Amino acid sequence: MREFLLVALGGALGASGRFGVNLIAPWSGAGVPWATLMVNVIGGAAMGALFAVAADNRPLMLLLGVGVLGGFTTFSAFSIETVRLLQRGDAATAVIYIALSVTLSIAAAFAGHALARSVA
Image 1 (tube, rainbow, N blue to C red):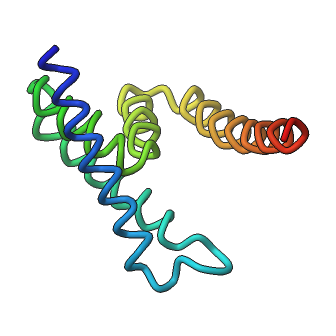
Image 2 (tube, rainbow, N blue to C red; image 1 turned 90 degrees about the horizontal axis):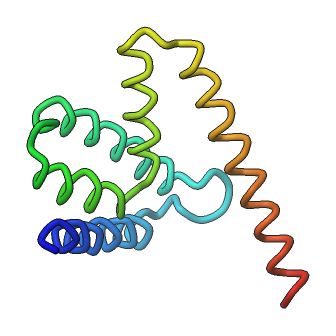
């Protein structure tokens, strides 16, 4: 139960932070979604740093990694998983993972959008 509370607390903080960035980022309007790009880059850097210093600290990883950064951006999880594949020398799997993650996620977003619009 304690672990769920750590994740929930962190997730609330991360999601609030994400919302805050979108509110204050004047460049988040038309064109490239700069606020989202900024959140993804910050989240990736933060996840890399967190993993480097606290990978063996489960409560801290749950609070900050799964919770805060997971609520802030799920791209941070994707980023660190790719780093881990590359660190263990599995570049081919990393490239496939990157290609599939990006392509399938965008395709799924299109499909979900189309399905929801057809039902509504």
